[in-house]
Image (cartoon, rainbow, N blue to C red):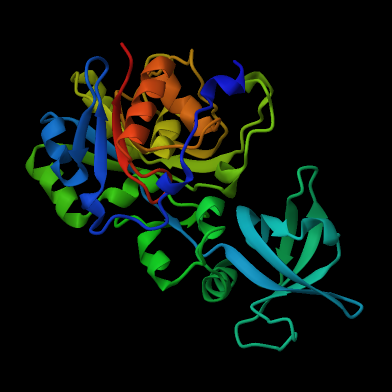
Length: 358
């Protein structure tokens, strides 16, 4: 399909730079399969669900994956900023770096150090092991395993999306704001943002309403921010991300499907995790490993009946996914409504609740 079919005009002032406070005071656009759209508030969402529905959350935890430091090559010092993308081994990560063109294999980078190359406590040393065709680099750190994790946590900053980071700096508040309340497993370099709306109180309200909950893990990668360069969806290469479907989640999902109850994914990452692990019969397998599933209109959904998600970028793979789920015309109309009603977009924005097209 042509990528321009998924384009739309978005006023820049609708891009949220901070989340709603409290989290569950954000707005929620309810998009049923047919009929009028409903303007709601997140904290009132349990009324939109049925007893026995199953919510599936992504419990990944964002690590402080944005690192700043210096490269010193024979006295030629360059300030470097790198965003970790994907772990390759206990001591190696791929990363997006600025200025990427000025780095080459063999370069030494000290993160956590200033331009004066001061040997700061907690400085993190690495070497550029390789450069990829798309500009990404492979970093081989001197530390490994848990020691490297601790050093990254000490030296790194929260990796805010470019459309936020380009307008304001990261601060201490983002360390809480850019993390779900149920985050449990370190590994993401971007937040599963649909889950940012949930509070402990809201999770309790869902439980009291008889809505079940289970969790899977998908470590969201920085590739989620990369723009589509292809003009046709058939030419796009999707980035791979690691995901895990534990036995308890697979059993809960398969039991719900067998009993005719609805499965609702909280976020596109949860949806992609489930659909990538589903067989033709709709059963979800216990699974662990990478997925690069790319969902566009025409895809036959096997598992997910409902999707809780934020509002996405024009021409993005995520807008393509929601268009596949609820219908392109339906989503274009929903987004036009959201813009007219001044819903807030992207990672810190408002939410939508979509149901699979009949």
